[in-house]
Image (cartoon, rainbow, N blue to C red):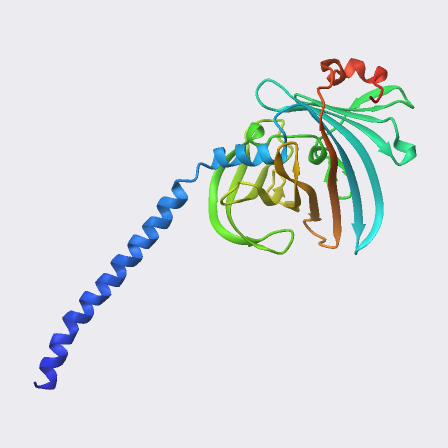
Length: 272
């Protein structure tokens, strides 16, 4: 057969093959798009909250340790009591245990109000959730909070990321926008495990869009009926050598009296 005729036959065949490749790619891409669209971002956020926090009143010990360039520079320990309010958000009461100079001080979060009580001055003052408690940990980071109550989630991406223990994890990135004035941050990027919805990593942003900090959730353990993260590693948004670790331990169901969560009761509060 003449060479020109061979080329004439090959060209339609090549075009057909190319069309099949394009069609296959479209099907694969469409399938991925449908899979991503099938993720209910707000439901994933609710599920992630349920892993971070029990859905019953509980107590937990919170230890905050600050590091600068790998050297420990400060630490404090608190005992936190939490109970669910109407609407799904938590009220939190935190009692300072260590160091000795802070023992007996109390922080109370109830609704949109956050109070700090010092038995030395016998006064309760309103404080901000954004205010730093220690290192990179703000007041809003240590009170018990359900993100789904204060943020609206949309699906940002489905991707593989490295978690806080340097394992690759299939994840969904949820883009959270503050939906109530009670929200501590303007927006959050939260990566959750694609299968379990467990929190893996988060980036916290100011209202201006400036990155404030990055956090990794790690050391998952069975606590109060679920595998929960017992460490949050918080890295400063500007200085990666400024790191704070928030550890939780001694979980227990504890139905603290509602009166404990009233500002007027703070001067009479004593540990159980």
